[in-house]
Image 1: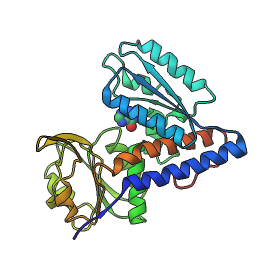
Image 2: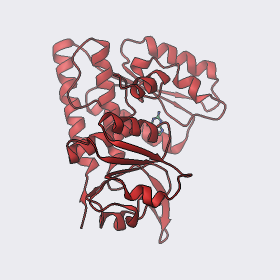
Image 3: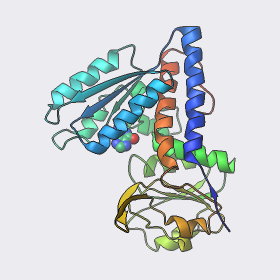
Image 4: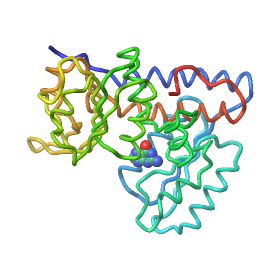
Length: 296
Ligand code: GUN
């Protein structure tokens, strides 16, 4: 069997089109321009690339982009004061503080200072609690994008066995909550899981989010399963830099029913979902109907 390749790049482009159309309507009918503020502390090169890309795509869908760059040695008080200011700024509907933060800053304290309604990352403890109890929340972007791809490919997920490999707060745990919300039977596996291979072989849906290059081989995958590879790992092969996922793509694609590639799978969906969350936040803040199909 050869797996269907789930094209995240094309899917993300469709989401951005939907967002752009909705944003144009908000402008025309309500004189409302959704705004996203991104805060970057320090000069981490990978973070700078992400932040540039977020700003560019925000403007491309017709939203306002506000970028705030602070020195690597900025004080916690400075950063919290900026967040307080953004929390009350009526032009800002979404706030994202790029992680990781420099070591002297307490990430939990900083994230929990963001007004929950503007927390487009879905990392604030209130949003974590709302998602965990099945209530309306802001949903973390990578799991939301993964869920959208699963629904698009499979239709109903009800009753399927889903295995999430990885227990991070950013991906593994919220992914498991979303799958549970769609009535999957969910297992969260991790580095201490006994006989991970056989746990994975029971999965109709396998989500890999561990950050270990090509850790999951094809013979851990149930024939016909849908595989979502969240990993983005930089490696060197044959002397050249390469990006690979947490799944060994070639052997997995020979067994799975469908699989997301790396690059071009989950990655492009993350920023598309950030834009979707910003639009959702702007609609909620103004008591306007939310766009269909862009939230969990
Ligand atoms: N750093 C890498 N990915 C992310 C993300 O999705 N959100 C934030 N805030 N920081 C990140």
